Image (cartoon, rainbow, N blue to C red; front, side, top):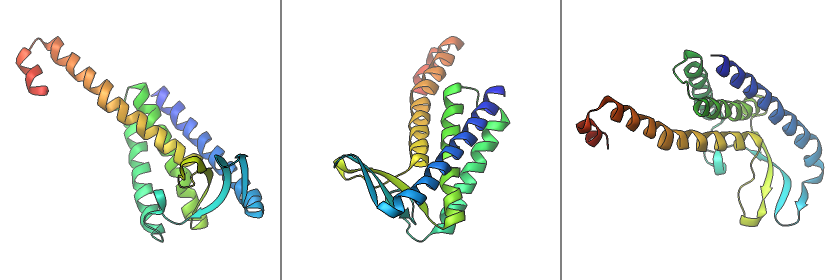
Length: 170
């Protein structure tokens, strides 16, 4: 449980970092539109996203608020229940919570999400730090589920000594 509390406190810190960067973007980038960090590769560009990823569900703010709130609350409950014990899974879920809540604060408080990371090399949609937290957390969680959890399951079956169970689990 100690690790879960540390992970949730870390999620709160990441939410604070996300909001501080967005405050800076609102204050600075709205006046200049874009700041090239690496010309034509990586810019800081102010964008108001009123939808979800890749600008899907434009104008569906309250639907997105509801979905995000339910997912964040469910993730917190799952962590606090003590059912998730593996470090990688705990940290993955904490990252997803941090990113989701960071963007949830924007949707509720501003009616849109502040995006500012503009990766122009491949013409990728503008995104933000909270999005990075959600993506990294989701990739880590998928990696955990696909590889660690499966390996742990197979090891448990082998330790039980039931060769037939191993065939049915595959």
